[in-house]
Image 1 (cartoon, protein in one colour):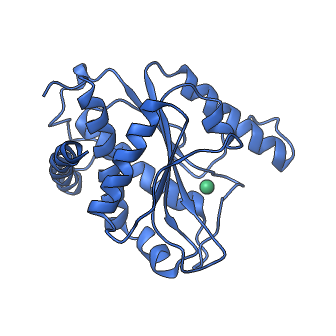
Image 2 (cartoon, protein in one colour):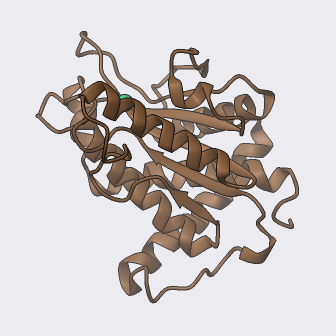
Length: 240
Ligand SMILES: [Zn+2]
């Protein structure tokens, strides 16, 4: 694990550089500068949880989880683009993926999740990163937590990301990875490596404020992307 962290610190440095590139030249004109894109054969499927009528949890300051999820996901996509990591972003605006004929809220929710499964399953060599925020009745609960689809690959990826989030973002966070319950439709219907990251608690006033900060979201994106790259690098996708 220590070796992985060291490797991820390298990723972190690269990403910090990436975001300074983003700030100065913007995404469209910037080219991948660090990663040999033609050598990366896995595609990161980024799933910003909820969207449209399904806003997910509501924070103590009144912000929808779906907006926070999207904001972090877009930053992951931005960094991935600069690094040449192929990405499929399941939504890039505040919308549902349900088919237009879906009527009730229940049908829309189901249609939306089915579409997310379909796109993920159709992505060759896809790795699914689902981004969510947590909420609990006790406002004192805080700390990011990573859940994984039951598979060794997913578990290893989740452990790496959890360790990165603890060491680089919040040393007081002692949460550990957890296998995702079967009741989570998306994660139980895909067959690729998959993790779901609850980036923090919208019910904790301090964390709610952090989760809405641009810089904090960038840090999160950097760590999530660093975790993905490190995991795939170790498996020989990117030459060392
Ligand atoms: Zn959620």
